[in-house]
Length: 506
Image (cartoon, rainbow, N blue to C red):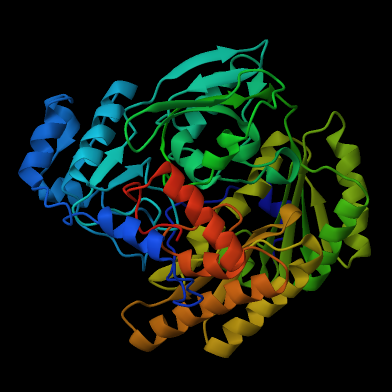
C-alpha cells in the first residue's frame, strides 16, 4: 500500500470549501429572568404593530433603492447561515448599506418602529447566529468591504466589516505583514463576521484568535449612535475594555462598522510533518509532549481514524488502514527542519509508526491538504452532518477523543473528529441521514452528550464557532446563573429594547 512518502509525490483532490452544517442544542438549564424576557418580547417583531410597508418606506428614505431588498425569494436566501437544525424566520426586509451613515439610519428606523435587526456577514457561520427572525430587518454588511488603511510602521490595518479575510491577508502581505486569524472559510468569511463570533483557525496554537488582533472598533448602537472603542496604539489601558466585549458578541450589543486590526511581520514559509499513530491516545500523548517541551508550532492538527479513512476514500492519500490518528505539525521558525526533527523524535517516543517531514513548502502543502479535506470527506459518509466545537485542556484531549468514540458506539453513529490539537479545540462531526427520524434523534442526542463530555472535562462548549441559536441553552450551563444574569445585564445596557439579534446567545 502507498505510504505518506508516496502521497507527497501526488495530488489530493476534493473541494476545500467550508460548507459545514451544525446541529441542535439541548433544551435544558434555563435560568428565568423577567426583565430579559420582557426586553426580548418588545423586540420580537410584530409586537410594535409596524407594518412591513411602513418599515420599507422609512428604510428607503435613507438608503439607495438597490440597497433595500423585499422580494420574498431573494430574502429567503438571507434567512440563515450554514448551521442546520437552527430555526430561521422570514425577514420583512434585507438591507445592504455601504456607509456608516446608512447603518445608523437603519438602526434609528428599527428603534423607532421597534423592529429587530439581525446583522450578517458572509453567512458562513456554524451556530445559527446570523439566522433571521420573523419580521426583522436583515442587515447585511458585505457591501462595506473597503480596506481603508494599511500602516507598516504602526503595524495596523483599518477595515470595514465586509472585507473578506483572505483579501485582507493578501493585501497586508504586499507590505511584508501578516494577519494571522485564518478560519477554514477564510476565502469567504468577512472580518465583521470573524469579530462577531471571535473566530479561530489553524494557526491559533501560535498566534491566537481574532480577539487578540482587534485593537479598536467603530460600532453603531441600537439607537443609531456611533461608538468608538479601543485605540490605534501598541499600548492602551484607558477605561473598560469595551473592544474585547464586542468581540464574540454576535451582533447582540451593536453593529461593527469598522475595525483597527493588529498585524505582525510576515513569518517564513512553514514546513510541516505528518505522523501516523496506532491510537488517538498515543497521538494526544505526543501533543502534550510537544507543548511541554516548549515548542511553538505554527500548526498542530489531529485527525482521528474515522476522519483519516474518510479522507483516504476521498483523496486516495494512501494511509494504511491501521492508522488510528494522524498528527500534522508545522513550524514557521528560522530553522523549521530542526524543530520538525525534534518533534519527530517526540512522536516516535509516543508510539508513532511513521513520521514524514516535508522537504519544502510544496510538500508541506500536500500534507496539510489532508486536514483541509477532513470535513468534506466526512460529509460523504451521510447526507448530513452536525459539527461540534468543544474545546478542552490539552491534558484532557485524549479523554475527549476516546469519550467521543464511546458516544458514537452508544448511539450507533459515525462520528469523526478533527482537532486543533495544539489548543485542545475539537470538532466532532456527527454523520447522519435527516430522512431517518430515529437516526436524526440519535444524532441530536449524541451532539448534546459530546458537549456534556466537554464541560465535564473542564472545557467549553465553543472554541471558535460561537453560540448563536445552536448552543444557547448550553451557554446557561457553562456560565451558571450568576454569570448568565451579569451577561444579560450587559445586553440590556447596550440594547434595552432587545432589538439586536434577538433569540441568540441567551
